[in-house]
Image (cartoon, rainbow, N blue to C red; front, side, top):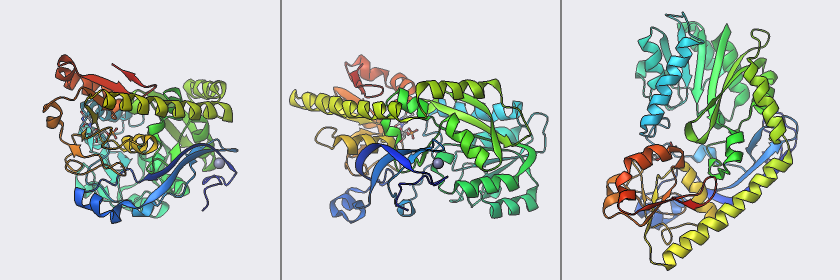
Length: 408
Ligand code: TMP
Ligand code: ZN
């Protein structure tokens, strides 16, 4: 596929963002692999467009997904206490809403997770089940189907377990290539009144914060209520609920139910109207966003070069997938950011994709503190700044680039 047509409805795409060629965001290399170079050649065009018919924003370049290395860490909580609590609350929310009075009902989660949601459901007597192709999920292996959710895998699950009252997914649907397959699976798996509840990065917040680093290979779709409504209706579902979430720099949680089963909650019309008013369904707002992205790059590079010229030390904090977009697009490397601290053991001792910035454990952050820390994990800013209070107390300063470049 050339990437010029919408991968859902085949109408033309209008490209509004082109960040150049990028390595895969999960391609952390050993120092030897980085020197060798052979493992570091996979590149794709990081560009995004909006469908002129269904408004769905998507990557337009050909991303070599099949070559994506499988990392050995779960996406969800990133070692974050805030995210752990978020997923516990998500489980409790499902118990109060979709699973109310449904002891013994089947509750499904799709995507690699650390199991907090399913454990919360199971503690209240819901039967938990996960769909995750790698088979790795923080919940008990016996309750994981090593499959994508598709019509075929759903039929097998239904034969063994019955239908599900709720299917939940976080940070997963934005990464699923086969959306028709997903909806066919939901149709098989859900009870007549069942709901698909999913949450993903929200284009409205990405634009509001100029958070261009949310664009990377693993995020194929950048949803709005407008585009999710169109998507749902295409496959016989309806957008009947929407909720704003503060995590990961602003997400929306969507509730999809079968057409004709439920009336949309009032918030749905509110969010749709707001998206229309903000121009999220048309070109001007997205073009203005792309213009701000270029300005952030200019400001960030100028700041880091000035600090280097002044002999100040700088470290990165959080070797996020997002940081791959920032480093590649801005041309950052060890000359400007000599190392990055990250709590993920599988990343430590490696170098970041493309930029080859060495990843060190957080304990190294204080040994000694740099003068400035570039906060790549800005979505965890509150938690990290609280944890690293001693850095500020020692005179250190944080560099942020969302929504604009500033030193705090
Ligand atoms: P995420 O933005 O995908 O959640 O990734 C967060 C990254 O930041 C992950 O690699 C772990 C790292 N991190 C830390 O190093 N320290 C922390 O306190 C937190 C919350 C995350
Ligand atoms: Zn479309």
